[in-house]
Length: 415
Image (tube, rainbow, N blue to C red; front, side, top):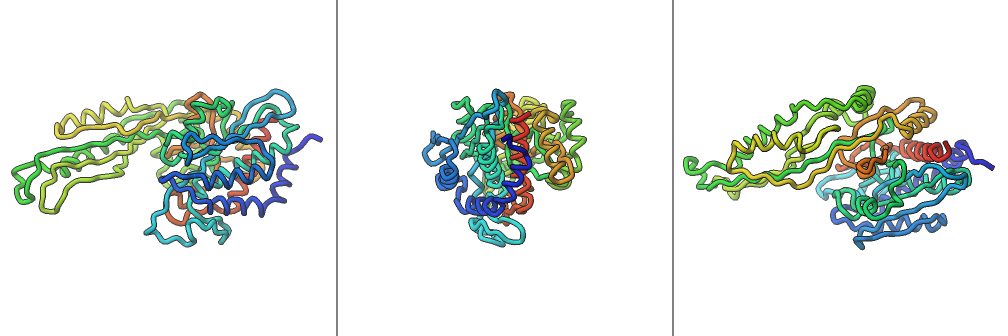
């Protein structure tokens, strides 16, 4: 008998308590990165996959950071290949922060699941795992192929997770990627800005703090440079036409999902000075000051667009040297492509509204598929507490993301 979406929704409703308990246990499998040892979290997933008799294999180019790949063919003939992607590593916990619930407890309270990594992105990865399970059960109805990827080493842009798989395992490429990073149920992310991380070092002779006539201060010069780098935010960066249309449609949803001002900076160069180090004592003129800048590039622009502005600023300061730490390219796919339409239709049926297309301000592994010309869409929970204390996901939102991923994958592989 041909499976239906109603069958899948009924199965999810029956398994509600199991799905909630799964995420709680997943949070308890600590996987902070750094240090990046994800063997416990990956083991938690593999035990589930084994118990469900689901096909998968482990790949561990770095032994402490294994990855899961699982693939199966549908039984209804040739079709498209959908890849599910999620990561298992999470931000570390600041021991000085006081949480409402222990960050590794996976506490279920106040209508939420609490803990480090529950939003970023163990809820989304759980949605991928359950999508894989439910669709495997109805594989006779599906066309094409479904692949699950649960990866390590995302939080540090490291080489041992999704990057390694894409470079070495053609099985994970597919025709489309669905990812559950925190995006909010109000938006579907079709692209993301790119980081350009820079290190600037200022060197002067230095001197006694009372002898300000004897040497320029490296910290004062660094402060001047930082102030001038702020002018990068004023560089004109008009969006490509399709992106501009999507951003105009998604302005209100982006603001609701990421806070006031998010839509404004989506298509703007932004600057954050993440680290400053300089000086030895209060009564010494610093001879060295180093700062690290996180420049985010909007869609349609690359580092070559801003580096001339940066070099022009630094040319006025012969005491300063520039070093590139890392850089990627902004990437996006069709904001109105087939999977976008499928997700929006399913959310409309489930919740009564259509999520808006949006751009991610931060980075995700979805960029790696887009960089290969493969459309990749992100639909996940609100980013509550992401990277800070009291990270949590509303249980209703989590279950909604599971339902949306399951139904959207089903539609993609049956249409």
